Length: 398
Image (cartoon, rainbow, N blue to C red):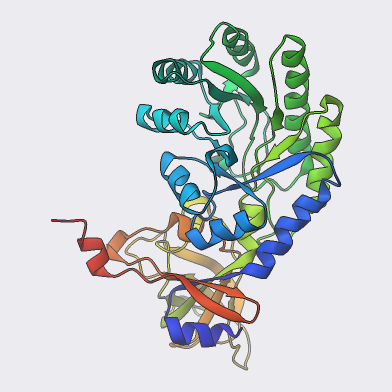
């Protein structure tokens, strides 16, 4: 479908997603297991728009939720509690009570204190809570420090020795059932080595704990596989899965994966319109778009790179541009020193690979309404989330 046609009908900024590419990327992971038992739990934090969650469920995915609100979205999308793993640091007592009451597939506990709180809630409710212990293996994933989760200096999980002590205590807690080891060492990982090492740790602990009588049901290896935002090399989804299976096969336990970015990022674009062009240096110009850090936080937050290109390139010599947004912050830069065909006010540009952590991280800063979202599927397109209005925002403010 021509992006200019969709933008003309729905306005800009606008997120546009490809259902066919989501299907293709999901099947690439699923097929790579080649019969090895597994479950794919889509990480809703990447993009939890209801139609996207439903599309993944229809493909056979289960869900990974990082808050009780994502649990609610998962259920609204048709996922059963048995299909949901509940991950995340700092789960509140109310969130834990909800998860225990629903009897989700597992609560991935992050500390001894959280395990005790789950135990107390389950005992009070007369339930047996299914838990996985998230291990922090102190592995450097070599990704941006803001999305590293597997080092001992990160807030996530518990060190291996502490995890052993926690697991030993579970056998004396009848309100708890240990179902898995969980490990997740970061996001946007572009090398297989840290993922292999994390899987090796999880497999070794799984064997150790099963020998001690733990009734483990699977090994949860999280997510983390990166995508090629800048055209650089990244492992394929098949290489990723085959690496993990090679490490875990000796346990005979099924594998749970929690992919998000690798499924959704390449399947989405953000369409924006040029609203101003002005001189920057003798050799370059500022191009201001009607989209910025409120629609795509990653460049301001991580210095992340996203390819940017005109929807309909104009003829003429390329020029260097600083692509900026309209938000009142100097950090509102979407692309620095980009060589692009000539751009003029009114032109449409595409910001690529924004299907993950675009809409999910959008904000109302400067009272900017969140954009509409469109899903393209089999030659047609439909709005899956309408554009927010000021009235929508003010409805919460009596």
